Length: 316
Image (cartoon, rainbow, N blue to C red; front, side, top):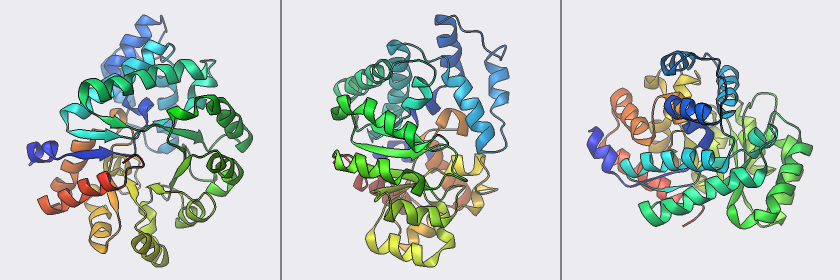
Protein backbone atom coordinates (compact mmCIF):
# COMPACT_ATOMS: atom_id res chain seq x y z
CA UNK A 1 0.00 0.00 0.00
CA UNK A 2 3.04 2.29 0.35
CA UNK A 3 3.11 3.12 -3.37
CA UNK A 4 -0.61 3.89 -3.40
CA UNK A 5 -0.23 6.18 -0.37
CA UNK A 6 2.79 7.83 -1.97
CA UNK A 7 0.80 8.65 -5.12
CA UNK A 8 -2.09 10.23 -3.17
CA UNK A 9 -2.11 14.05 -3.66
CA UNK A 10 -1.62 15.70 -0.27
CA UNK A 11 -0.59 18.90 1.49
CA UNK A 12 1.88 19.23 4.36
CA UNK A 13 0.80 21.76 6.98
CA UNK A 14 3.11 21.01 9.93
CA UNK A 15 6.76 20.99 8.96
CA UNK A 16 9.78 22.73 10.50
CA UNK A 17 12.32 23.39 7.78
CA UNK A 18 15.19 23.01 10.23
CA UNK A 19 13.78 19.56 11.06
CA UNK A 20 14.41 18.36 7.51
CA UNK A 21 18.18 18.64 7.95
CA UNK A 22 19.34 15.12 7.13
CA UNK A 23 22.71 14.00 8.57
CA UNK A 24 24.35 13.88 5.12
CA UNK A 25 23.42 17.50 4.35
CA UNK A 26 24.35 18.56 7.88
CA UNK A 27 27.87 17.18 7.39
CA UNK A 28 28.16 18.70 3.88
CA UNK A 29 27.18 22.16 5.17
CA UNK A 30 29.55 21.85 8.15
CA UNK A 31 32.39 21.08 5.73
CA UNK A 32 31.42 23.95 3.42
CA UNK A 33 31.33 26.40 6.35
CA UNK A 34 34.37 24.89 8.11
CA UNK A 35 32.43 24.06 11.29
CA UNK A 36 33.70 21.37 13.67
CA UNK A 37 30.94 18.96 14.68
CA UNK A 38 30.65 16.97 17.94
CA UNK A 39 29.94 13.80 15.88
CA UNK A 40 32.66 11.96 13.98
CA UNK A 41 30.49 10.77 11.10
CA UNK A 42 26.95 10.41 9.78
CA UNK A 43 26.34 7.14 11.60
CA UNK A 44 27.39 8.57 14.98
CA UNK A 45 24.97 11.44 14.41
CA UNK A 46 22.16 9.04 13.49
CA UNK A 47 22.70 7.25 16.82
CA UNK A 48 22.35 10.61 18.63
CA UNK A 49 18.81 10.77 17.22
CA UNK A 50 17.76 8.20 19.87
CA UNK A 51 16.54 10.93 22.25
CA UNK A 52 14.05 10.35 25.06
CA UNK A 53 11.92 13.49 25.23
CA UNK A 54 11.10 16.81 23.56
CA UNK A 55 13.86 18.76 25.33
CA UNK A 56 16.60 16.28 24.36
CA UNK A 57 15.37 16.46 20.79
CA UNK A 58 15.35 20.28 20.83
CA UNK A 59 18.93 20.37 22.17
CA UNK A 60 20.04 18.18 19.26
CA UNK A 61 17.92 20.15 16.77
CA UNK A 62 19.49 23.50 17.72
CA UNK A 63 23.01 22.02 17.66
CA UNK A 64 22.36 20.73 14.13
CA UNK A 65 20.89 24.03 12.96
CA UNK A 66 24.21 25.73 13.75
CA UNK A 67 25.61 24.55 10.38
CA UNK A 68 23.10 26.77 8.57
CA UNK A 69 24.97 30.03 7.98
CA UNK A 70 24.49 31.42 4.45
CA UNK A 71 21.62 32.14 2.07
CA UNK A 72 22.79 29.17 -0.03
CA UNK A 73 22.62 26.88 3.03
CA UNK A 74 18.98 27.79 3.62
CA UNK A 75 18.23 27.38 -0.07
CA UNK A 76 19.82 23.92 -0.11
CA UNK A 77 17.92 22.86 3.03
CA UNK A 78 14.55 23.96 1.62
CA UNK A 79 15.24 22.59 -1.86
CA UNK A 80 16.17 19.15 -0.47
CA UNK A 81 12.81 19.08 1.37
CA UNK A 82 10.88 20.12 -1.73
CA UNK A 83 12.48 17.31 -3.73
CA UNK A 84 11.18 14.86 -1.08
CA UNK A 85 7.74 16.45 -1.48
CA UNK A 86 7.84 15.99 -5.25
CA UNK A 87 8.74 12.32 -4.81
CA UNK A 88 5.78 11.84 -2.41
CA UNK A 89 3.19 13.85 -4.39
CA UNK A 90 2.95 16.57 -1.74
CA UNK A 91 1.45 19.29 -3.92
CA UNK A 92 1.25 22.10 -1.34
CA UNK A 93 3.43 22.97 1.68
CA UNK A 94 3.04 25.49 4.50
CA UNK A 95 6.31 25.15 6.43
CA UNK A 96 7.36 26.88 9.64
CA UNK A 97 10.34 29.22 9.68
CA UNK A 98 11.87 29.85 13.16
CA UNK A 99 13.95 33.04 12.73
CA UNK A 100 15.00 33.17 16.41
CA UNK A 101 16.87 29.88 15.98
CA UNK A 102 19.13 31.76 13.56
CA UNK A 103 19.08 35.44 14.57
CA UNK A 104 20.13 34.43 18.10
CA UNK A 105 23.25 32.93 16.45
CA UNK A 106 23.98 36.18 14.62
CA UNK A 107 22.57 35.14 11.23
CA UNK A 108 20.65 38.10 9.75
CA UNK A 109 16.90 37.58 9.33
CA UNK A 110 17.02 38.57 5.66
CA UNK A 111 19.77 36.01 4.86
CA UNK A 112 17.67 33.15 6.22
CA UNK A 113 14.49 34.34 4.55
CA UNK A 114 16.11 34.97 1.15
CA UNK A 115 17.38 31.39 0.90
CA UNK A 116 14.12 29.80 2.00
CA UNK A 117 11.97 32.07 -0.15
CA UNK A 118 14.06 31.53 -3.30
CA UNK A 119 13.81 27.74 -2.91
CA UNK A 120 10.03 27.87 -2.33
CA UNK A 121 9.61 30.05 -5.43
CA UNK A 122 11.74 27.63 -7.48
CA UNK A 123 9.68 24.76 -6.06
CA UNK A 124 6.53 26.34 -7.44
CA UNK A 125 8.09 27.10 -10.85
CA UNK A 126 10.10 23.90 -11.36
CA UNK A 127 8.27 21.27 -9.28
CA UNK A 128 4.70 22.59 -9.27
CA UNK A 129 4.53 22.68 -5.45
CA UNK A 130 2.51 25.60 -4.09
CA UNK A 131 3.42 27.12 -0.74
CA UNK A 132 2.77 29.52 2.10
CA UNK A 133 5.44 30.32 4.72
CA UNK A 134 4.60 30.59 8.45
CA UNK A 135 6.71 32.76 10.76
CA UNK A 136 6.96 30.91 14.07
CA UNK A 137 7.84 32.28 17.52
CA UNK A 138 9.79 30.14 20.01
CA UNK A 139 7.64 29.80 23.11
CA UNK A 140 10.49 29.04 25.53
CA UNK A 141 11.72 32.59 24.88
CA UNK A 142 9.96 35.75 26.09
CA UNK A 143 7.03 37.50 24.47
CA UNK A 144 9.28 40.58 24.21
CA UNK A 145 11.64 38.59 21.98
CA UNK A 146 8.67 37.45 19.89
CA UNK A 147 7.67 41.11 19.47
CA UNK A 148 11.19 41.89 18.21
CA UNK A 149 10.96 38.99 15.75
CA UNK A 150 7.69 40.41 14.44
CA UNK A 151 9.42 43.80 14.07
CA UNK A 152 12.08 42.08 11.91
CA UNK A 153 9.41 40.37 9.82
CA UNK A 154 7.18 43.35 9.03
CA UNK A 155 9.38 44.76 6.23
CA UNK A 156 9.03 41.31 4.57
CA UNK A 157 5.36 40.79 5.39
CA UNK A 158 4.52 39.63 1.85
CA UNK A 159 6.76 36.59 2.43
CA UNK A 160 4.49 35.18 5.16
CA UNK A 161 0.91 33.98 5.34
CA UNK A 162 0.68 33.49 9.11
CA UNK A 163 2.46 33.50 12.45
CA UNK A 164 2.78 30.40 14.63
CA UNK A 165 4.06 29.25 18.02
CA UNK A 166 6.35 26.27 18.61
CA UNK A 167 9.18 24.66 20.68
CA UNK A 168 8.92 23.50 24.34
CA UNK A 169 5.26 23.49 25.28
CA UNK A 170 5.11 22.60 28.98
CA UNK A 171 5.18 25.70 31.16
CA UNK A 172 4.76 28.06 28.20
CA UNK A 173 1.00 28.45 27.63
CA UNK A 174 -0.39 30.25 24.58
CA UNK A 175 -1.65 33.03 26.87
CA UNK A 176 2.00 34.14 27.31
CA UNK A 177 1.90 35.34 23.68
CA UNK A 178 -1.56 36.89 23.47
CA UNK A 179 -0.32 40.46 22.83
CA UNK A 180 2.09 39.60 20.03
CA UNK A 181 -0.59 37.48 18.35
CA UNK A 182 -3.09 40.36 18.67
CA UNK A 183 -0.53 42.62 17.00
CA UNK A 184 0.20 40.09 14.24
CA UNK A 185 -3.51 39.77 13.46
CA UNK A 186 -3.86 43.57 13.35
CA UNK A 187 -1.06 43.54 10.74
CA UNK A 188 -3.07 41.12 8.63
CA UNK A 189 -1.45 37.78 9.52
CA UNK A 190 -3.44 34.60 10.06
CA UNK A 191 -2.49 32.61 13.18
CA UNK A 192 -1.74 28.99 14.10
CA UNK A 193 -0.17 27.49 17.24
CA UNK A 194 1.26 24.28 18.62
CA UNK A 195 -0.98 23.17 21.49
CA UNK A 196 -1.99 19.91 23.14
CA UNK A 197 1.09 17.87 22.21
CA UNK A 198 2.86 17.58 25.57
CA UNK A 199 0.77 20.39 27.05
CA UNK A 200 -2.78 19.89 28.41
CA UNK A 201 -6.09 20.40 26.57
CA UNK A 202 -6.35 23.80 28.30
CA UNK A 203 -3.58 25.03 26.00
CA UNK A 204 -5.80 24.24 22.99
CA UNK A 205 -8.62 26.30 24.49
CA UNK A 206 -6.19 29.19 25.01
CA UNK A 207 -4.88 28.96 21.43
CA UNK A 208 -8.46 29.10 20.11
CA UNK A 209 -9.85 31.78 22.43
CA UNK A 210 -6.82 34.02 23.10
CA UNK A 211 -4.66 33.60 19.99
CA UNK A 212 -7.69 33.07 17.71
CA UNK A 213 -5.90 30.47 15.60
CA UNK A 214 -7.13 29.05 12.29
CA UNK A 215 -5.53 25.66 12.97
CA UNK A 216 -4.14 23.76 15.93
CA UNK A 217 -0.73 22.17 15.42
CA UNK A 218 -0.65 18.72 17.06
CA UNK A 219 -3.75 18.95 19.28
CA UNK A 220 -3.84 15.21 20.03
CA UNK A 221 -4.58 15.76 23.73
CA UNK A 222 -7.95 17.23 22.76
CA UNK A 223 -9.10 13.60 22.98
CA UNK A 224 -9.01 13.97 26.79
CA UNK A 225 -11.62 16.78 26.81
CA UNK A 226 -15.05 15.89 25.42
CA UNK A 227 -16.29 19.49 25.36
CA UNK A 228 -13.22 20.49 23.35
CA UNK A 229 -13.74 17.56 20.98
CA UNK A 230 -17.28 18.74 20.31
CA UNK A 231 -16.05 22.24 19.55
CA UNK A 232 -13.38 20.99 17.14
CA UNK A 233 -16.00 18.93 15.34
CA UNK A 234 -18.69 21.62 15.30
CA UNK A 235 -16.33 24.36 14.08
CA UNK A 236 -14.25 22.03 11.85
CA UNK A 237 -11.00 23.41 13.27
CA UNK A 238 -8.14 21.49 11.61
CA UNK A 239 -5.51 19.63 13.65
CA UNK A 240 -2.10 19.13 12.03
CA UNK A 241 -1.20 15.77 13.56
CA UNK A 242 2.30 14.25 13.27
CA UNK A 243 2.07 10.51 14.08
CA UNK A 244 5.75 9.49 13.90
CA UNK A 245 6.72 12.56 15.92
CA UNK A 246 4.11 11.68 18.56
CA UNK A 247 5.53 8.19 19.07
CA UNK A 248 9.19 9.27 18.88
CA UNK A 249 8.55 11.89 21.59
CA UNK A 250 6.41 9.42 23.60
CA UNK A 251 3.15 11.38 23.43
CA UNK A 252 1.95 7.84 22.63
CA UNK A 253 4.11 4.90 23.67
CA UNK A 254 3.27 3.02 20.49
CA UNK A 255 1.61 3.88 17.17
CA UNK A 256 -1.09 1.29 17.91
CA UNK A 257 -2.29 3.65 20.70
CA UNK A 258 -2.57 6.72 18.46
CA UNK A 259 -6.01 8.36 18.40
CA UNK A 260 -5.88 10.03 14.96
CA UNK A 261 -8.23 7.55 13.27
CA UNK A 262 -10.64 7.64 16.22
CA UNK A 263 -10.69 11.44 15.88
CA UNK A 264 -11.20 11.15 12.11
CA UNK A 265 -14.20 8.85 12.60
CA UNK A 266 -15.64 11.24 15.20
CA UNK A 267 -15.57 14.00 12.56
CA UNK A 268 -12.49 15.97 13.67
CA UNK A 269 -10.63 17.55 10.72
CA UNK A 270 -7.32 15.78 11.36
CA UNK A 271 -4.43 15.88 8.89
CA UNK A 272 -1.19 13.87 8.58
CA UNK A 273 2.19 15.64 8.67
CA UNK A 274 5.86 14.90 9.36
CA UNK A 275 6.91 17.70 11.78
CA UNK A 276 10.71 17.15 11.80
CA UNK A 277 11.13 14.23 9.39
CA UNK A 278 14.93 13.94 9.54
CA UNK A 279 14.63 13.26 13.29
CA UNK A 280 11.34 11.35 13.55
CA UNK A 281 11.71 8.60 10.99
CA UNK A 282 10.09 9.80 7.82
CA UNK A 283 8.25 12.24 5.62
CA UNK A 284 4.51 12.44 4.91
CA UNK A 285 4.15 9.10 3.12
CA UNK A 286 6.01 7.30 5.94
CA UNK A 287 3.53 8.80 8.40
CA UNK A 288 0.56 7.58 6.35
CA UNK A 289 2.19 4.16 6.02
CA UNK A 290 2.75 3.92 9.78
CA UNK A 291 -0.99 4.46 10.32
CA UNK A 292 -1.80 1.73 7.83
CA UNK A 293 0.71 -0.68 9.38
CA UNK A 294 -0.14 -0.06 13.05
CA UNK A 295 -3.80 1.00 12.99
CA UNK A 296 -5.09 -0.71 9.85
CA UNK A 297 -5.94 2.59 8.15
CA UNK A 298 -8.05 1.91 5.05
CA UNK A 299 -7.72 3.52 1.62
CA UNK A 300 -10.95 5.40 2.27
CA UNK A 301 -9.59 6.82 5.53
CA UNK A 302 -6.32 7.77 3.82
CA UNK A 303 -8.27 9.61 1.12
CA UNK A 304 -10.19 11.57 3.77
CA UNK A 305 -6.99 12.45 5.66
CA UNK A 306 -5.33 13.63 2.44
CA UNK A 307 -8.40 15.66 1.45
CA UNK A 308 -8.50 17.21 4.93
CA UNK A 309 -4.94 18.47 4.41
CA UNK A 310 -5.92 20.09 1.10
CA UNK A 311 -9.06 21.60 2.67
CA UNK A 312 -7.12 22.98 5.69
CA UNK A 313 -4.59 25.00 3.66
CA UNK A 314 -4.33 28.65 4.63
CA UNK A 315 -3.45 29.43 1.00
CA UNK A 316 -6.12 27.96 -1.28
